[in-house]
Structure formats: structure tokens, C-alpha cells
Amino acid sequence: MKLLAIETSTELCSVALLRDDELFVEEAHAPNQHAEQLAPMVRRLLSRAGLATADMDAFAFGQGPGSFTGLRIACGMVQGLSLGSGRPVVGVNAFVALAEQANASRVVAALDARMGETYLAAYSRMGGDWEAAIAPGLFVEGALPALPGRDWVATGSGFDAFAWLRGAYARQVANRIEGDLPRAGAVARVAARRLARGEAVPAEQAAPLYLRDKVALTTRERQAAK
Image (cartoon, rainbow, N blue to C red):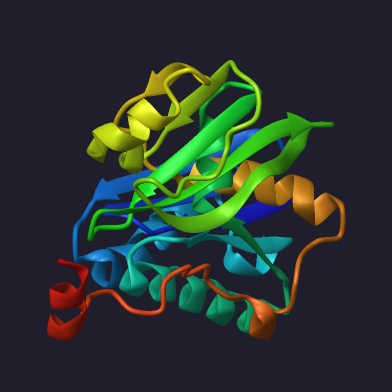
């Protein structure tokens, strides 16, 4: 199986190429430069592997949530590659990517959504893949969903940013991974399993996971919240 994956939902621009069990990765910390960095990174990665986009069985991308611009860049890139090659697309959300990277069987992942809010989801590894214990959502302090059981691993920028979030799940969380970001290598591994199960979609059905419709509150909304 040959699969090209792109993850640009955060300041990290990450590209991975999975060729059977061999993984090629290229990454750059590139805030606000994903549009300029991505295409050259893809070309370099394909050159390293001695492959072309026409050789791919599918294309995968990080669905987010995250930077609206970053999500559109990744989705647009794989849609273009898919339409040009006739190969399908697999989307993998940021929570599943973080869970895949955590080397644990129970992972609660949270992302800093700004404005004092967090994107959050929890997954358990079941039968070789991830099953949601808490579906992805946007949450605020005092309104978090219950996390079932114990021995969870916490990861993601939300836990790094918010003491109230760390405190809310202190009894359920056994370990915390600091500073991790979703990466294309994890997206590629998850996408390969989904592709093998026939879960890919055509380019026109590929879509980011936004979870929030707008990025900033209006002045009236900020005043009402005080």
C-alpha cells in the first residue's frame, strides 16, 4: 500500500508517505507558511521515496479541528491530488492522530480552541483501531463530559493550556504527554487501516472537521459574556 498524508491543522506542517511498512516523513515548524511550504515538501518526499502521486493508492489529510486556513490547505491539496489521479481520500481527525501517537490504549485529547474553550475527544483502542468514548466537541470550563474509568493518557495543547481541564480529569488521567501536535505519520497509519476497510471517499466528499463556525466573538458577544 502506498499512501500520502498531509497534516497542517497547527503551526506544524507535516507530510508523510507510507509505503507498505516503510514511513517517510518531512516536517517544518511553519506558522502562516503552510501554503508556501506544502507543495515543495510533498515533492521532496516523493523524490526521497522514488515515487509519484500517480503511484499512490490514496491520499489522507488531517481533518482538524484546528486552524481554519490550515484545514482548508490540507483538504484542498488532497482533493486536487485525488481528482488528478482518480485515487480516493481518507480524513483523520486530530484527536485520533494524537491518540495514535500516544502509545496507549486509552487517550483523551484536547486542543486549545482559544477564547477559553477546548476541543476535546476521547478514544479507546478496540480491535486495532480507535473507538470514541467521548465524541469530538467544543467545551468550556464547567461543562466537560464525563470521562469513563481510569488510566487515561492525556495529550494535546488543551491540556497544556488549561489548568481547569487538567484538574477536571485528574482522577481519570494516569499520565500526560506535553507539547505534542498531530502529525502526518499518525494520519498515514490510521488512514491505511481505514483504506483497507474500504472507508475512503471521493475527493468531493472530503471535508474538514471545524467544530466551530467562527473564529472570534463579536464585541456584543464578549460584553454579554462578562
